[in-house]
Amino acid sequence: MNPVGRIVLIAAYAVLGLAAVGRSSYQISTKFAEAPLPYLISGVSAVLYVVIAVALWRGWRRVALWGTSLELAGVLIVGTLGYIESDWWADETVWTGFGSAYGWVPLLLPLAALWVLLRGRQAQVQSADAGETSTS
Image (cartoon, rainbow, N blue to C red):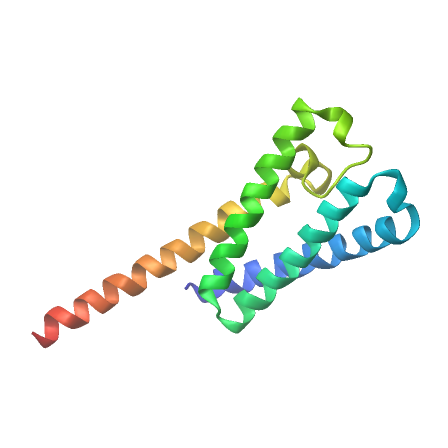
C-alpha cells in the first residue's frame, strides 16, 4: 500500500472517528429517546471509523477492506433511505444525505480507501507473480 495514501487515510479516519464518537456519544447519552435509529447508526459509524483507522495503522488490510466496504454500503443505504423514507429520520446521522453534513467525506472517504487498498493489493499480487516467474 502506498505509504502516503495510508497515512492520509489513517488521519482522515481518525479525525472522522473522533468527530463521530463525540457526536454520537452526546446524542445517545442526552437525547436517545428522540431518535434512537439515527443515533445508533451514528454510534455504529463512529465505531467503524475507529476500527478502520486502527486497521490501517496496524496494517490489517483485510479488516480495513471489509470495514470500508461496510462503511460505503452504510452511507449508500442510509443516504438513500433518508430521501425515500424521510420520516424514519427524526435527526441526522453521520451518513444522512450521503454525509453532506460532513462535507461528503463519509461518501468520498470509503471510495478513496477502497481505491488505495485494492490498488495496493493488486501491486502486491503483481509483485508476487513477478517473483514466481523469475524463480521458475
